[in-house]
Image (cartoon, rainbow, N blue to C red):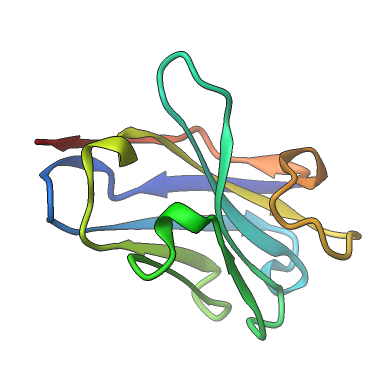
Length: 125
């Protein structure tokens, strides 16, 4: 089992920044690909970003490319999502997720085994 706890959400004005953190506990963190997803009211949960367990590759949904940066610190068993130039359409609950045993398809939420409880991000215009 892997337990994931997100933090860092909040209210920010458009153009501002937030850094989300996801602390993992349980089995070996370095063996998991990590992802961030988000869900706005009335919408399905969608992919935001992912990072391979080796940190060799990162992936982003098109609308956040150039604004968001995912990173991980395996020693601290934590994954981060630095969000810059935030827009009102980034408002959502952000979820951290972990997976193992898959190759590719980093944006597919069904491949993730473990999920955090989510943290609210609200961007005001």
